[in-house]
Length: 85
Image 1: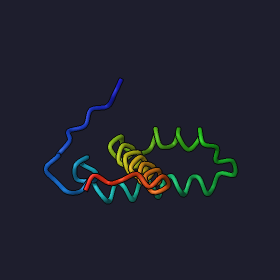
Image 2: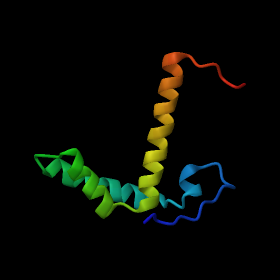
Image 3: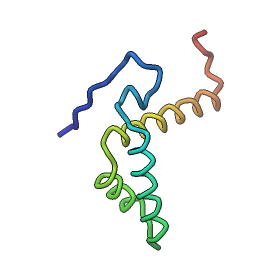
């Protein structure tokens, strides 16, 4: 089952578009980083589980969107695809 988000497409900021509150974003990621630093074996699946349990869905979506955009830009730069401008 997908989580539901009310998207605000009338803003220039992805965080605002997804309703991400900056203090929650900082607090939730800081908590996960603290847990990971204390744990000796931070496997990818454990990180994923912590994100699932501790981070709001809209923050996870923002992180995934930013990473996806970065990946696409890296591919564009690597292969020098012509821009549409």
